[in-house]
Image (cartoon, helix red, strand yellow):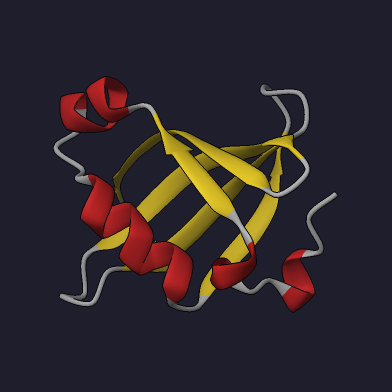
Length: 83
């Protein structure tokens, strides 16, 4: 279980749905920037066990990411888009 209030990006491995992200003109590098920067988090009800992360890239682009913990220590980024 991810404890988002104590989240440390360095403690996790990541998987990305690169095709889905590219369909929304979001790069993996931008997703990584959001994960390493501050973000807000809330449950993503339509996706069991998923979360919505809202944060900014280093360039200031505001993104919403849909993620879930695939298994302990691995976060899967399902999709993302501009806000």
